[in-house]
Image (cartoon, rainbow, N blue to C red; front, side, top):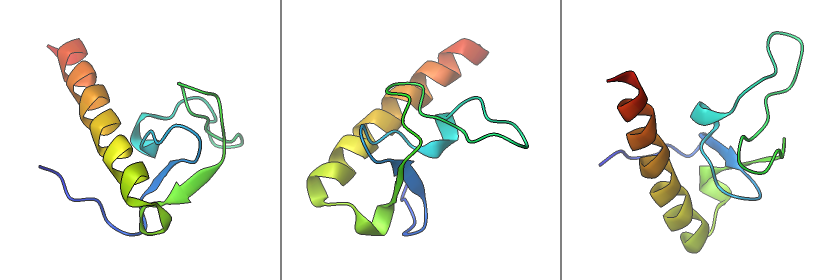
Length: 70
């Protein structure tokens, strides 16, 4: 089980870890692929419920990413 650090960023609306964010590039801002938001929240500022939701979402997206690589 992965432990998140206080300074890791998540989508403020849906809780997706910024590892899975897309677009942007060197001059643009990345955005959440689920809701399109560009607002983030640090792990240390999340409530217990937000952390649980973010953890669940992280593992779902990580599993999907791994399935795509195989």
